[in-house]
Amino acid sequence: MTATPATTVANLRDLGGTPLSGGRTVRPGLVLRSGQLDRLDVDSDPAVAALGLRTVIDFRTDAERADHPDRVPAGARLLIADALADKMSSGPAGMPVAAQLKDLLSDPAVAEEHLGGGKAQALFGGVYRSLVSSGSAQASYRTLLTELADPQSGPLLFHCTAGKDRTGWGATVVLSLLGADDETLMSEYLSVNPAVRQAFAPMIEGFTAAGGDPDIALALIGVFPSYLEAAMDEVNTRYGSMEKYVREGLGISDETVEALRARLIA
Image (tube, rainbow, N blue to C red; front, side):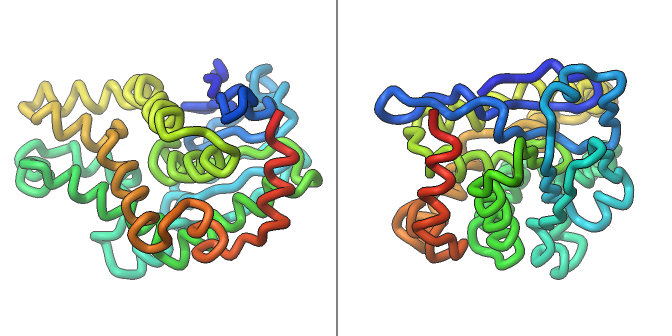
């Protein structure tokens, strides 16, 4: 996976070049991931303009989109696929952590009470399991795979707020279907950490300067193996394999999977 040095889009990465089984790779320029696109400006950002994006899939909630609406290139389709809609309907506790970072890191004492002692990691474990099992998440990732299998979608970018959790699971599902091994999946999942931590550095520094536990800040802002492992365990417990999750959980046909592979494997 290749980081794209964009100036108006955070955490922009091309899944192209990721190694797959049999010495093959993901075809570049067709499937990309990032954080939110509220600052996207193709006129001042040649790296983004060069992508020729035709389709954008937004995994964010209604509230996130209202606060920071996407700016998409002219001619590109914007598809809304709220992965956490079911979780949000259960109340404020279901809100995505990325949408609450400012509030969660504004008071070190409150953060310690609610997120210290491993509570943050447990929270993320539950979120990742819901990305596998909830109906809204399954509909979102069904949209992602269906669009990626369609040549008419052109270069496609999918994203959430920080581009690490909902987006990270989407990338894992795609790369697994294409034939990436477990080591590659974990490596690619963790590869966003430098960009995410850089984007949120001022927030981390302010929190720790006020006496906050840096481990809590990093648990919220970064990604860790245990997060992805929670989702993979949910897949194995419920379906037995990624392929069965895609077919039975997401409702993706064999024909669509084959079309996706034919289009994205180089």
